[in-house]
Amino acid sequence: MAAVQRLLRAAASGGSAMAAAAARRRMTSLATEQAPSAAAGFSFAAEERVRRRPMAERNVQWVFLGCPGVGKGTYASRLSRLLGVPHIATGDLVRDELASTGPLAAQLAEIVNQGKLVSDEIIFNLLSKRLKKGEDQGESGFILDGFPRTVKQAEILDGVTDIDMVVNLKLREDVLVEKCLGRRICGQCGKNFNLACIDVKGENGLPAIYMEPLLPPNNCMSKLITRADDTEEVVRNRLRIYNDMSQPVEGFYREQGKLLEFDLPGGIPESWPKLLQVLNLEDQEELKLAAA
Ligand code: ADP
Image (cartoon, rainbow, N blue to C red; front, side, top):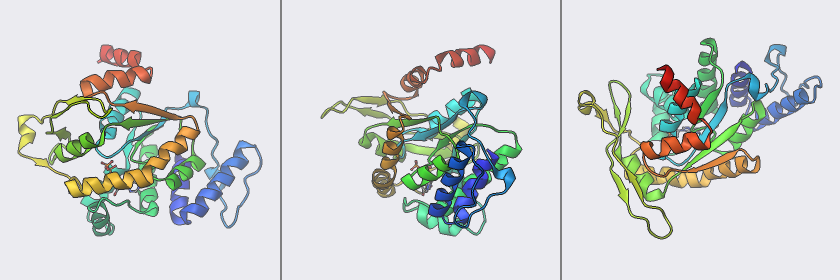
C-alpha cells in the first residue's frame, strides 16, 4: 500500500506518462528479480521497492466501473463493509477537496460542475494522500470506485499494483439519468438517498426495470442536498464523457480477463443478493449476519 501511494504520487509529480513508464520498468525489474534500474531520470529509494504480493497474503484489490448513477458507490461500500477493506471513491475525494478551503477548491468546482474530468495530477495526488492516511491507520486492500477512469489512469495503476477483479455495473441509460436526478445527500449525516421511483417497461431489447426510491428518514428529510453536477445537462455530459473516456477502460480489463460484467436486475433488494452470488460471497454475508 505504501509503495502504491508513493508511486502514484511520483506519477503525479513526474509527468504521468513518464512516471507510468518508469513504474512499469521498475515493476518489471522487480518481477524478474533483477536489480531495479534508475530509468530515464527516475530513481527510486530502496524502501520504495515493492513486490506484488500474492492475493492469498493480502486483502482484495478490486475496481468498480460503471456509468454515473449506476450505483458503484452503493455496492462498493456494502462490499467494503462485508470484506473489511476500504471503499475509496475518487469522486468523494474530489468533493471533500471542493468542500475545503484549500487552494484547489475553486479550480475543481469549475471542472466538476461541468461534468468534466479532473486532471490526472490532481487525482493521483488526492488518491496517494488517501492511501497514505489509510496506511497509517493499518488499512490493507481496497475497492476503488471512480478510478481508473481513463486508459492512462488504468495503465499507471497497473504499473504499481495488481488489481484482482474489475466489476462493471450496467444499467440502461434512461434509468441512469433518472437515478442521477433523484440522488440526494443528507447535509448532516452524509448518507445517500434516491427519490426517484424507477418503473420502466422492457422495450427495444432493453429489460424492464423497477427500483423503489431509497427514501431518507424524517430527520434527514429537511437537510437533503443535490449534488451541483446532478443537473440533467451535466449528467448527460458526464455520460458522454464516460462513453468516450471511461468505456475503453472496460476493454483494457476485459483483455486482461479481469472484467466481471454485471447487469443490475433492479434495485438493491434484487441486485445485492445476485451480486454476492456472482462474487461467490453469499456465505460471507451469512457469517457476517450471524455474527452481528
Ligand atoms: P459519477 O457519479 O459521475 O460516477 P463521481 O462521484 O465518481 O461521479 O465523480 C465526480 C466527479 O469527480 C467527476 O465528474 C470528475 O469531475 C471527478 N473525478 C472523479 N474521479 C475521477 C478520476 N478518476 N479522474 C478524473 N476525474 C475524476
